[in-house]
Image (tube, rainbow, N blue to C red; front, side, top):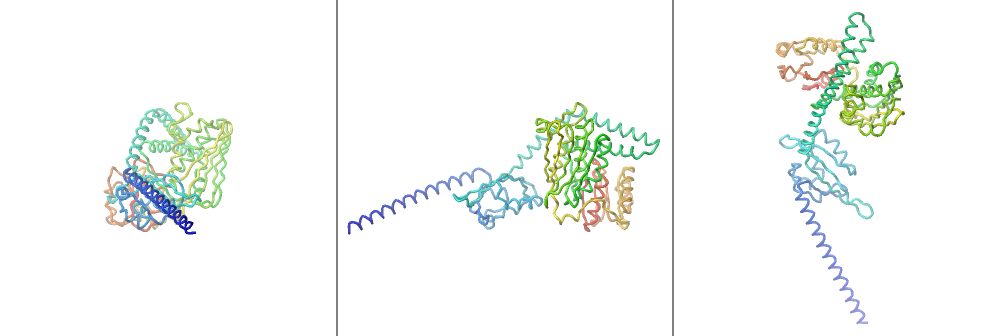
Length: 489
């Protein structure tokens, strides 16, 4: 019996010793792995941090956090959401939403440093789970890509300039044709007034403006002025121009779903998108056909614009390149190859996406999905913004014809309008009068001297503003009830 007990004790000691050795070996392996991880994380230059599965606890943060995010590491240990502190205001809501998801996509966002400089950051998350699938750790890697983005943008600009030289002949040909239409209809209009001729001139002017927008968009990154608008109202206004543009042999059907959510987009860019797609459809139906424009609600968060034609369609090889800048299947002098590339850029800039479905001899369908604006933004809704004669607007423009056209359009919308021929004239008027709003052209950098409480909109001379867009901006500024300085590009 004693021998049996001794044997059992020895066996237990052996087991304990063996287990202790294994634990020590595991501890050594763990310590070695941790040391190698820290060596990598602290030597690669990127920011690396490890969070608990519930995102409440920071288990590790590399020293690069302090230089990249300009926040102390201790702050992230105290609060696992400290990395959101210096986020750019325009990126904050998006990143806070994405932080609550479990996606494995890379995300790019901006940080505002103490010196007001903007740094672009790219981050990606990895998830560590146990055998049962339980989330244990979230590992995030972030790198500063500011210089890389700058180099990429420089390369794109060089490529654009090279391509612009190659397409100059085609643009000149198209533009001369547009001007010829304007000139011919203007001459006819002198002899007899015809509403149809006026529509033709409007279409030609729109096409000329579209070409100018396209060149600006690809040569100097044209700025846009997004506003909240009623999509159905905007497309209803474009409908008549589309009918004239495509011609009598093409039947245009417009089906707009009622009670759509509002979207935030530059109005002139939206018009350009529809007109570019309409031109594309027209060219695909030389013998006539059907063009259908629809709007649809996709629930609470998205709306869709559908532009569908019954034309010749596209083979897969064309579909693969249809949104590439300067790609065109048209003969020389008939197209710039910018139309659909600009459509793609406008949709992306509005936070949406565009999809294409087509096949040879089966027509083409473009589906544009746009995000619905949250209810608090609806106060900036743009439709036909009314004015009041109690609201006085001072229009300052060195070109008497443009000044007169702007003033006439604003009076038609109900505003009381006074005019000034230059900044000196405007300053003199403001010395004894305070209008509700002042609209000033750039005038080679000159500015109107005014009281700080005076609301002013400066217009860019090099980029014409549509009257509806300007009226929407005026209504928005006047409704803010506070001093503001805005630029309409």
